[in-house]
Length: 442
Image (cartoon, rainbow, N blue to C red; front, side, top):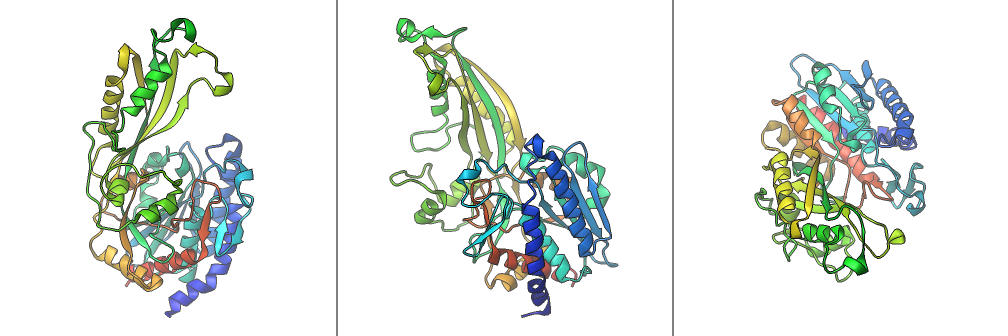
């Protein structure tokens, strides 16, 4: 065991205590009533970074949530590494559904449960552990950037990157906000799907009508909407919208029993789509109906509904353009309304997909660090989800090498109830990052 690995293990108890303190702060930027908690979280992160040895620590905001920037200058001739994480978290939902209080970190069976334990306050903990293990004096320049509104789509990130471009400039960017293949096998994320969504409104009447008097002659909006939404997929569950991009995925085995276990598919419910699991998850588009506005059952009556709406979310395969895909989805929705129903599509959020050419010395160093910390090679994996800010970093710093890592695993349940962090993964992630800083300065 190297001296550096030993030092990471020495600092981990204090890092875990700091992580637990951060988890107790309800930093939900999506909830205006808790904006003060987000500000308190930024203050706490800034104090932790100052205590770790960063001389230049700032809390910054460009019209959105507070972010923290901490800088340690590079020795002469050494590169600068930017370490990214975010301190805001998803809303917790119904606390009664959690096995333990969502903002009280609780250990069970080697996992630490609580909102933000993994996504992404563990990213902050990883950066703290790596920096502390180097005694606050790593062989490279280190800038830590902890964002405060990632879970709300990072609306002011572009402004932050523009206003503080000199402070955030780096040769290597490490984004600690992704998954691992398992608790025993690390991953380097090399592709992410993009995101585009819209609201489709269907109107057939200028007012509701008695369904007995007019049913069978006049179409109701909800029946039309159901038909429009059903047209988005073929009978096998493949996306049926014309003009969408499909890429290729790595040859990685993702067996059906793992899909069923990790997704929670009910007995008798099958998968949708064609192609390998990783092809469907990482390299093909996906469309999901994530909300419908119509008359609730408790308020329903025998009335033809005049207007109904749905929110449609689309994932865009790497290599595709999210805005062009949203245009294609809009055309499809407008073209598939039967009986002359009026369709209005309102565009929503757009985030571009991203693919990384993970070759060269920086990625070789990362893979070597993973191998030493985990005892096995990392898997290059795609992610079906979207992290649109990665494309923003790539645009702002086109020469920088971007490494997407993380502390999550298939059982983390980020964004869901009982989110948790595997404590062994936290240790190995911290060791990996400390070793990476050492190798990049070598």
